[in-house]
Length: 281
Length: 292
Figure 1 (cartoon, helix red, strand yellow):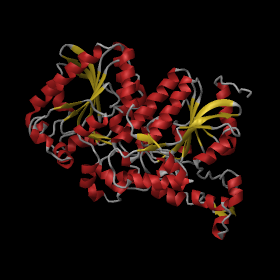
Figure 2 (tube, each protein chain N blue to C red; figure 1 turned 120 degrees about the vertical axis):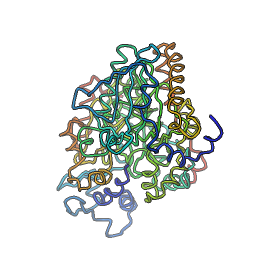
Figure 3 (cartoon, each protein chain N blue to C red; figure 1 turned 30 degrees about the vertical axis):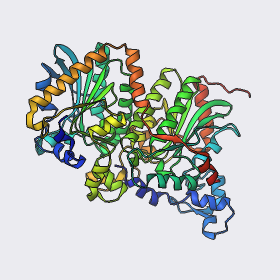
């Protein structure tokens, strides 16, 4: 990564990834994959436009692609519900992940969502269950799974596509437990402190490496991914080719153990000292 | 996303909180705390009688919240509970200002090390590993300690071929621990998957309130999902949804009965029958009572 990008604050990066010029999955697909066939529907309820799934060819190797879909303008965003999936979106993704497992195709997940949709119908159709199931099944999916955060990775709605063998962040992407606005409104009861929240939440690509959540940072061109779409797509593609080649060499047992361990070791705790215990009595 | 939990709860459940109970236990004679007024039907009764009835209102069947200790006391066979990881406390992964201080204060106030108690016990002589969340500790939000203790408990159950029962309650992920808390969803769910692979039974008992990241992970993954009557179970907070749709939600939205109707809960069981239900379900899944 170059020095200029490194100096951007988390808040500046959030502004950058919210630019309407920021490339979305629909911009990247033709640059990264040779063929792409979109596959629709969860076979239960319907098809969720906020989640894009399909079969693609990556340098002559078939892969399954799963992604949140952001729009580039209001009309597009209305259609894809601002990249906030309903339960059927997660169920579609899981259906195609299981299909990938059956045919031994690697799964590539692109994360780009503020979070799962919060609404009556989403609750009625089991948003919580859909995400839980996705997390649980991806943990044991018997094929390599690679996740890339393209822009915004928010909350459980992002994690549903983030249980993987390796997670990469575009250099300006963020990944967070909740949106900075939500964080400010919950913890400080003041949504206008979004900027403070953003800068303290530890949500940048470097933070993710440090916390053990991500393993790799994919460089964006100076000024952000939108400055040179081709170059950004090329960087993503190069990363995917390398990491899939590496993960494909491992036996499934080794892969699944490493995947479990990757998440198993995240957490910061200690054993309480005797002094404090005595103090309490 | 879950900011309303605290608000809603204040109005819906202003009875049966821990402070009141402690006052009674310590024989403090403050008149207001001798009487319990049911937040649902407004019936009044002696706090002692309410506690003796396991914090269930005898006239309308309102199930008040229990602390983790109270839950264990009415669930496990007498003297059978052995606690795991009782001194595990969290660090401050994103250096959230004042987080350590708040934890310290809560620990001495509640006597808990964090929002969950885990351990092994017997229910009607059947060996079982349990995790019980306690909403009085930061609304039982899931951070490093909750995630780690639950994961360890499940792994212990897997290794020892034991069933696992989670009594869930949570406002969701613990914001103050940032991304680390979100990752606990993956950690606990992974442990559940392995426990299932080992052919073991996992039962979740949804108690008030089960929401957010806990609903979107291990709480929704039970082989059998039981809920107490009328408890709040959902993913998104009520106020968040109301903000999205710009209208008031019906009162029964996201209650256990709603989840039953929508197909996300296997059954609703009353507190007084819980031990019996759990032991029978374990027997039906080939676990046997053991004579000690």
